[in-house]
Image (cartoon, rainbow, N blue to C red; front, side, top):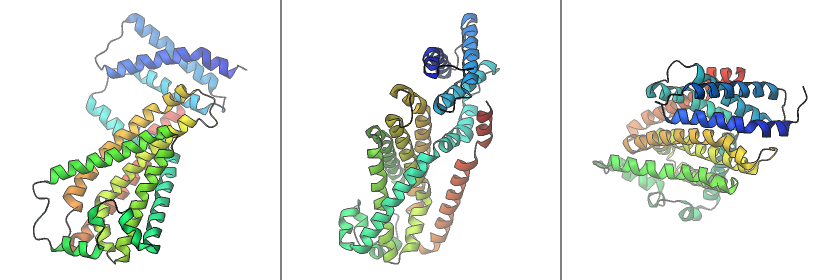
Length: 335
């Protein structure tokens, strides 16, 4: 069957929008009940969308429209055929074990791009410190990093009292707030067509690279790893996820190779951006707790334990993002 693709999408889009709006309304109100006419209408819209999906299956030129319609049909199918709406606890479990990691993998090219930008910044920061150590005062964002690494290590290890005693909760909240702000900024600056997101990622990479090089040159690598790994293996990926979301937004605004209008392109990435940023917030809450209650304890005999703890977290995070929800990926491909 031969159809005019643009006219077809233009004619069917109002029905898709109506179906999506109905599904969104039901998602917002767990107690909502459809009357007979509304039930007939949503069933008609679902069947029409499913038929449209079948017609579009042969058009490789519009993969984003196909993906959008595929997700819409899957949502409608679940809404129509479920016997009861799952409780919040089950919804949270499904989000954590399926939706978030699946969304990450669907947008993983943007994540790898964010990682490359961050690593380039790290290499640049390390090179600046290595070849021009006097520029350290310009690169280091915090006063406690401006001095000699060895002097700081000696000071931290010689403390007989816990300087954060009684204030760890406040300190943890401050860390969470700062890191969430950076991640939200990385996303929001995607509105600059991704340029601002690239700058944020590169700048944070420069800082990390400069700090790492400074401590390695001072032969304080063990302290560095024991200090950064426990929280950094969660905090840094979370910031990269914020950058991933920003790059996805930037690419949606640019729209290279995409014949859809701006509004439709943003509609297609909206749910993924929200999912990614909720995951970022959860990760940064955990990182803030770890940084306050684990990373700030400095003693030579516990560095090995802290490093091992960080490595275990990194392995678990990588396994979670790469493997969790794989069955749902397969199901969505077959839908």
